[in-house]
Image (tube, rainbow, N blue to C red; front, side):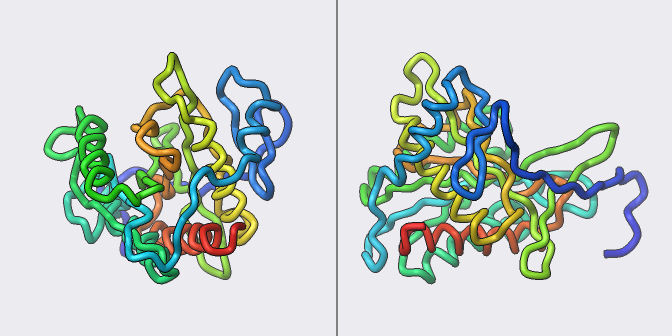
Length: 262
């Protein structure tokens, strides 16, 4: 990379550690940030339940769907934040996760629809329809991963969340799991069990890769399966290379969880 383009703001690197005490609930090597009204004991019980589905490595049928409600988010030296080129935006990061899963014999599909283009409004309604169509066509799909990137900014500076893993810099990742509110996510505890198992798989293999799971009253179409989660792959301050490396690590850990059980 050359000099920062004129008018581009500053980017500051930061590493977010696991939490302890207060709102944080342990889940193996990682933690869950409980932003709900559920007690720590209730969260811990759901988190400890394990995977609510059985992945079938070696099956010819699709097991996992990777998609992007906000596909145009990208990691840009021009400081613009969005681009429709799927070789540069979130689709390029999701592809790295899919590669690792497919290499492990877990048939994984990736949808690269730009649900947030040309209009950002209505992105989740459009991605909901996309996921439903896949589930109808491929009822074997058990896991739906909505792959995003975060936006962290303060005092006019973008923050890139980073971790050093095996001598290389990766974007830090964060799982977001929604909690039920007035019946909108009746199976949320099953999603939380998946989130906790995946968090532990990533953090135990690659210490420092993850930020705590965010467990909050979010929706994000997570009622569609019992394996529906959103994952933030760094932020709008990270580079594409950092995010793609994180995608490889995330995919390896998930493949290990599905094939080895941990």
